Length: 201
Image (cartoon, rainbow, N blue to C red):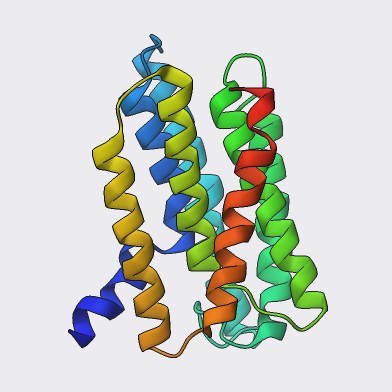
């Protein structure tokens, strides 16, 4: 059971959620999108939201700014969250736009707002669960895609609700977060997705 709970934090690490959201969108969208365009955008998202942050984390750890990728100390979160915000801004400027890819554009804009909100909390010495923020935001996005495209995604939505519970249990089990930090993370992920839905739904 210990291993089962711990593995959730690695499988659904916050860095992997954005690329998962793009994969899911391209898989269910009824719109025709050139396969080459899909591939280019997926590679761009992978580089900007996964590879660059990973390299940056290793560099920051080597110079002693952070101790581990889990960012347990609230003060260690400042630079990584600032970097992630800048990378998301870059993604919105260079990869997606609100006219050709409104669903993905506003998905990442919501992720950016969630990240900025988490950074602001850090300035007040408050720590939100980034795992919960990421997975709850993706879950909300899937619900909105189901409504937007009038597609029955109940199985996927139900599965992601289970994953939300799995991740919450994992973070509590490892004592990485308190219940209130998980709740804050959940709402930080969900609220921006629903606030921006009027722009693309």
